[in-house]
Image (cartoon, rainbow, N blue to C red; front, side, top):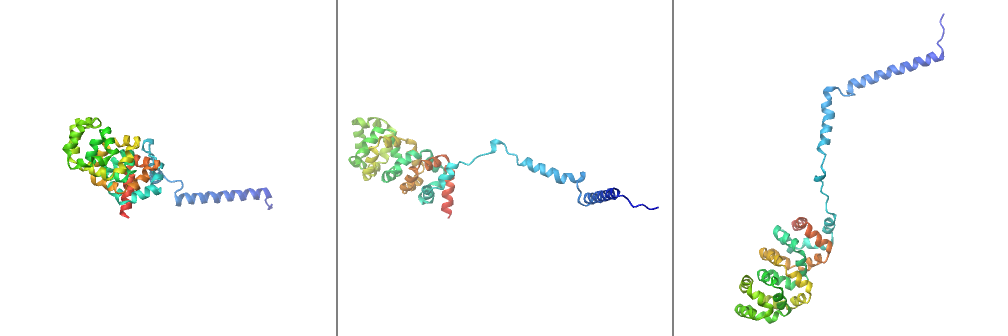
Length: 267
């Protein structure tokens, strides 16, 4: 005689059916979608991911953090004006000249305070190398340049005077320095024409100390066109020189300034 199944028996049968359907679904997914991947597919899935991660590993020595101070300086108005200046672009196009500018930025900053003097120094750099190595003589001329203008036409008289004057005796004994001055006597005319500028520099001991940098003049003499161009825009450079952050940025990363100037010139 047929007896209906108890409610608990029917419930158990229902769960067994659900389980069987679930197993079937998993089996179908495994077959059609290859989950988990079989051995012949492992190479195409796991290995490339591992190789990619390995290639992304960078040692601490390879990590170079950008100098934020330089980046900030390049965005400042004074630096933007500098890199846009055709005169600076001409200097920046000469890597060695720009490196020299960066290496002696403080000296050029002092020069830029007196544009007329800066121009005279750039044009007569070789002679200024000689004067810079003898600060007493340099200062004596700078205090009253007009008094020495006459020697532009008579370098021999300057040599005679130098030998007789205490402030010039060391200069007179320096044959190479005297030869440089006698080869470029126009230095006296240039200084006389910019007398006020040189007098202002001579009145500041710190300025004269900065100008006693023979390497700075030697760099100018080695790259006359580049520094003469810069001397035509001293106010622009002076603005940068007056900004410590900008000046430090120029000294630490001249190549970035060169790139910025090149980009500005291209535009």
